[in-house]
Amino acid sequence: MSGSVYDGLTEEGDDPRWAFGSGFEDSEADIVAPVPAGTDPADLAEYCLMLGDDALVLSHRLTEWVSNAPELEEEVALANTALDLLGQARVLLSRAGHLTGRDEDALAYWREVSEFRCVGLVEPSDDLDFARAIARLLVFSSWRLALLHRLTDSADPVVAAVAAKGVKEVTYHRDHAARWTLRLGDGTPESHRRMQDALEWVWPHLGELFRTTDTERRLVAAGVAVDPADTREEVDAVLAQVIGRATLTVPQVPATGTVGGRGGRQGVHTEKLEPALVVLQSLARRHPGASW
Image 1 (tube, rainbow, N blue to C red):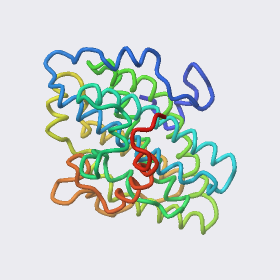
Image 2 (tube, rainbow, N blue to C red):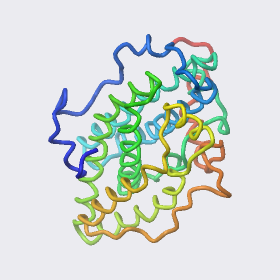
Image 3 (cartoon, rainbow, N blue to C red):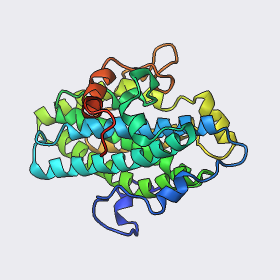
């Protein structure tokens, strides 16, 4: 893990630009790879849905900024971030589909709200408030990058492959969000106010990110998953660094994120997920059985 939110930009990589593609080498072969020894296939499928649904739903939310971002270049940047996350989602949902007898389209377009396993952070609409979009991306990418770094050693080849490629992609996502946080937070009084408001808006969702499900505990023991609670210190440090440099204040809003300890991982979602899925799934449901 880089010591600074900016160190990732100076590390050696295959491509110094944004990661535009969504493919994974040999992904089709990996999708049907044997389940690691000591792993329940149902648990592995559930875990792939957790990681995949996070990426799928946030990808959908980011596409709402196409034609609405404050700059043309920013529309391209957010669209490419959405494509990166969609690529991760496709592979993870394909792996889950292989384990459950369904394909990625069935999982994306034909599940009901309660069957999704995404965290609440990715669900709400930001009502086209750009600062809120940036605050969510900063929190999400800081957390996901911490997870993906650890998952490169996963015993499951698909999870490991997604993590290895995702580390490069999400490093850029996190840096992009951090730069905008600095620009807005240390900008005009109005941009500072709106960026601080955005942090207050997103902060209640943090608590859920670090809660460990029973499925994750079993997969940690099998060497497949990581305990999200183990990422808390790292994520808090990154966010504190960025927020401090942006002359903002870490919110004092309670980071609850769930009701009664249950949240998106258990299929209990905010009221914002259903309308998002109506849009995401509308074309497929209007033309059932169509080939894409």
